[in-house]
Length: 177
Image (cartoon, rainbow, N blue to C red; front, side, top):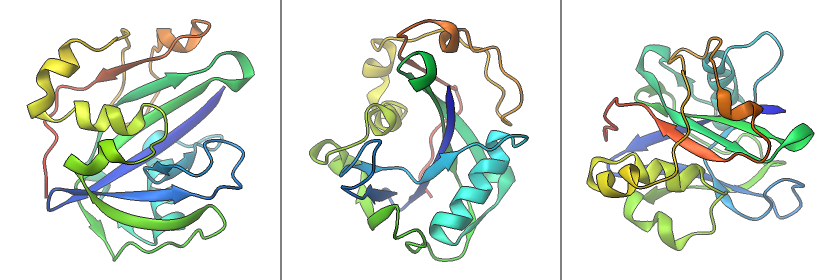
């Protein structure tokens, strides 16, 4: 199983997206939230801080980060567990510091996300976490997980279910900076 973390930097009603190069093996030629693999011994929050610095050149304020939810996709060795985080505050101006992974970055209006080719689930989940999408959140397929907001060990029953895919979103409000 691959454990991945992504971060949503949100400002003035827009979210920062990265465009994955068409040559990428996983999810080529689509827009995504910046992030990457959680390395051995790292918490999700530590990986989030490292990835935001490596990919965008920003330092996140750890206390401002909160988990929006988790996405599970695939099964067996190809299974992916993606922690999706909102980053409320950061230092620095985001720039594409990983041109081998992304060929573009852009601030995109949350209302414009539906018109872009997006990585499966992650950005749709971000939209569903907005208060105005309460109906969609109540009617989406949800799996039961006990998730720790700081990325420590979590009882994630969906990870052990073959072919499971679903979302669970924290009750914390999604705010726009």
